[in-house]
Image 1 (cartoon, rainbow, N blue to C red):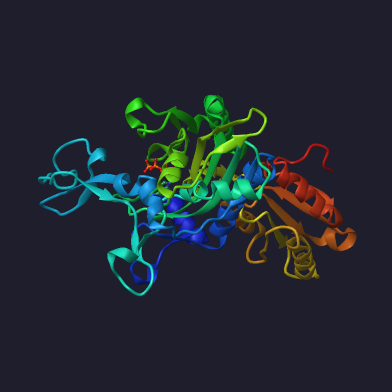
Image 2 (image 1 turned 135 degrees about the vertical axis):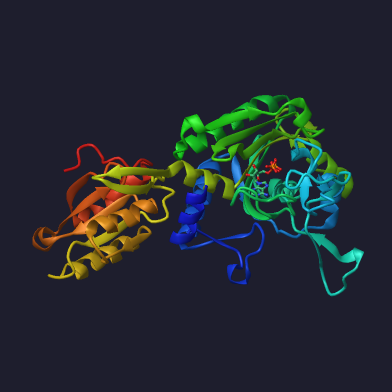
Amino acid sequence: MEKIASLCKRRGFVFQSSEIYGGLGSCWDYGPLGVELKRNITEAWWRDMITSREDMVGLDSAILMHPRVWEASGHLAGFTDPLVDCRQCKQRFRADQLTAEKCPECGGELTEARNFNLMFKTFMGPVEDTASVVYLRPETAQGIFVNFQNVLNASRLKIPFGIGQIGKSFRNEITPGNFLFRTREFEQMEIEFFVKPNEAESWHRYWKQTRFEWYLEYGIAPSRLRLREHGADELAHYAKGCADVEYEFPFGWSELEGIANRGDFDLKQHAEASGKDLSFFDEEHRERFVPYVIEPSAGVGRPLLAFLVDAYDEEIVQDEPRVVLRLDPRLAPVKAAVFPLMRKDGQPEKALMIRDLLKQHFAVAYDQAGAIGRRYRRQDEIGTPFGITVDHETMQNDTVTLRERDSMQQVRMPVDRLVDELRARITAGCAGVAAGAP
Ligand code: ATP
C-alpha cells in the first residue's frame, strides 16, 4: 500500500487534500492521472449499467435534500456507529471494530460506547438554528427513491427497471483510513432496481452475478475477488438479503460494493412520511403494488484503489527493475505515448504531429526527454498500454513502431492505421498485440 500511495503522489494520481496546510484528515484530491482513471471507471460503469441497457435510466439528484428524507429513511435515528474514547490517550474507536476492552493504542481504559451519527450537518440560509439544519447525503440512494414517481411519470418504463446515479456522498467516519478505502467524502455508483416482490430473489441473484463479473471484466484477478453473503446478524432489519463483493487488499479482504435486497422498505417509508403514492400499477395484470428493490451500491475510490493495487507489478527486465501498472486499456489514464527516437532529423516535429492526430481521439502523452528505455518505463509505471516511436524509417515511409506495455512486443505499422488500430485494441479490453498484426 505504501508503494501504491507513493506512486500515486509522485506521478499525480492522488494528493492529500489541502496538503500545503498540513492536510485534511482522510480527504483526497485526484491529480491529472487520477482524474482520468476515475472518469474511465465511472464512464465504464455508466455505459455498462445504464446506456447499454434497455431497463435502466440515469439520475443526478442534489446532495442537499429535505431533512425529512433522512427521518423517513431511518438515517437520523439509525445511521450511527458505536463510538468509544480512551480516557488516557483520548483516541476514538469504533466499538464494533475492537477486539479487546482496553485501548488498542495505549492499553488505557475506554468509555462506554455511545451512538455517533455519521451524517455531516450544516445550515441552509442565514440563520443557524435547528429549523435550518440540512445534511450532506451519506448515500446517493435516497435521491433515487424520492424521485421514483417522477422518473416513472416522465418515462415509459415498466417494472422491472432500474435507476442509476453517480455522485458524492459524505460520512463523518470515526476511523477513516487505508488511503482511499475509507474517506469522509467519497463518490458512489448506485443502482436501485425495482422489481415485483415475487421476482426479487432471482433479480438479486442476477445482480450479484452481474456486478461480480464487472470487476473481472476490467481485469481484477479472480483469486483476489469474492462474493461474501451476509450472515443474519449483519443484515439491516428490513433487508431480505445482502452480499458484498470483496477484494483482497494488502490490508485484508474488504468491501468494494454491497448488493442488497431491500424489500419495499424505502418506498413504503417515503410513501408514509410524504403522503404520496409510491406504488406501481401493472396494466397487464391490473394490480397495484409497492415494488421491491435490489440495490447494487459501489464506491468509486474503493474500486479505483483495487484496480491500482491489482494492476501493480514489479519485474526485472534485462537486469533492470521495471514497475508496471497492468491496467485494462479502457481504464488506463493515458492510452498511448508518442516518442521521437532522436531529437533531430525532424523526428520531434513528426512525433508531435502524430500526438496531435491521436489526441483528437484519445488521451495521449508526448515525451522526448532521456533514453528511450527510460521513457518506456515512465509510461509503464502509469499504465500507458501503448508506446509509439518515431525513428529514421518513419521519415522515409511513414511507419512507426507500436510497443505494447505488457508483452513489450513491438510491431511496425503505417501512421494512417494508428487511430483504428489503437481504438480496436483499447475497446477489446486487453492489451495483447492483435493476432495478424504486421
Ligand atoms: P463499511 O462497512 O466498509 O463502512 P458500508 O457497508 O457502510 O461500508 P455501504 O453503506 O454499503 O458501505 O456503501 C456502499 C459502498 O460505498 C461501499 O461498498 C463502498 O464502496 C462505498 N463507501 C461507503 N463508505 C465509504 C467510505 N467511507 N469511503 C469510501 N467509500 C465508501
